[in-house]
Image (cartoon, rainbow, N blue to C red; front, side, top):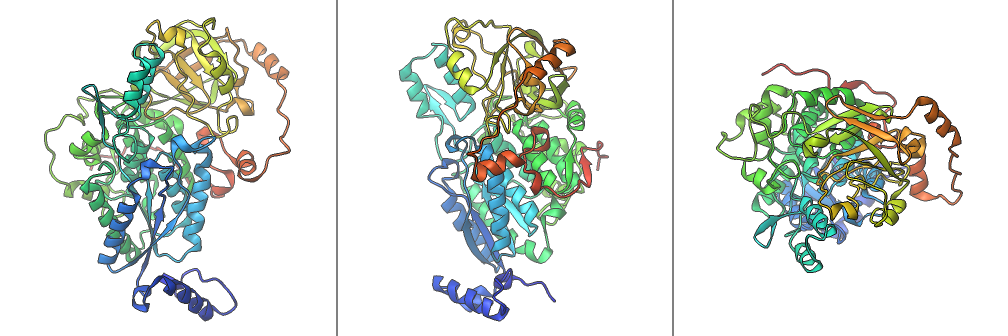
Length: 579
């Protein structure tokens, strides 16, 4: 029997499928549709607009543009709502809700009659959640991002969220600016709707979506409130119709080659450390494993090319004016799998050949003159992180890349909040700040608390950076010598849970090593003294599901039951031959 399409797809079974279709058409005609409209291919539009999500504040305009593109191509667009997650408005964390949003997206795609789907996301966890869900649902899908916000100005200085948020807050904690000025800055950091204007997680995931080939070329960089962003939305709707006839399902796009290209781009743009977790989760849905050691090997041969905060000086709107991600991909061409298919139906190499010619600009550097000689992210291992840890080396202090210091330990975020600014805190600039219990399970939800604030007593002395280590995450907008994603986490018996104040810790980024300098016998004795936490009998609902099913950071923090039964590939594999 031919596969059902359009309104005939996924009919509720009442024992009479013709009646099911009759009933479905009767109800949707209540919205004013005609039979002629309902006979067209259906493009679903995932609407993640929310009053609690200013990153998605241009959602109505984007939806209208997508609808226009769909109808120009002969389809019928039908929008539907899903969960919307904003980094600053999600308790306990946005990461806690990412998998829920992926399940919501997947199940609504499956449950409703659509021949293809446009995924509109933007804020940090929304794009990975949508790609995870679409990868599992399996129908033709195309990603559209809301775009970055515009930059503001404070006393003649250009500012934008959220690297400058942290920079000015650091000045405020150090008593370098007063309450009046920090309030003035607060009014200028987010100058429009849209995602963070630096290479934070949202911008990183936008670039990775384009690098994966599941977004239109040029779709990553256009700011939210520009005509370019609206035009991309219309073109996305048009392409969503063409993808139906072409059978352009995610498994044809999200291949091992595509993920290798995306990893290469992640390293070259100085992207967020969160990109590793999200790519691991998306790839996992396709049965592809991300090999962290091979990612690190790739990093050694992939310099940072994009001069953009927090690793550089510019903002996303500058990258767009410099030609967007196409400019980056053109420079990376010798290192990319050019035969990887994109949702346009053409290969990445063919898209680069068809792109406008390069022009003079100062945001994207050449391979021969990078802003940082290696990839933005390094993978660390050692007795403190047997399953790995991550550092954004391009945003770290060079003088701290090899460092040994005394541990100053905070048992959890509450302990840190209570003690970090005490005048009598026993802490010195060459110490190593350690924060436990902020991993996937410990928090729960792996908050971006890995950006441990410099103790106020040191900030007032002019200390700007220290080595900081945790099993949590850091914002992609943050800079500093910050080791995150320590795996396994302290809450499930990882060695980080054994660290005590006064222990010596050695960080050696060039050697990719992070070590707790304590005798193994002593660590074993400490482990025996630990008392496993008692199960919480009051746990219910999604939190219970989350705590029972979430995987560790090196596995992408997805739920174990959402992965395929086996992995069929592992990436990165090897450097592609030049094409």
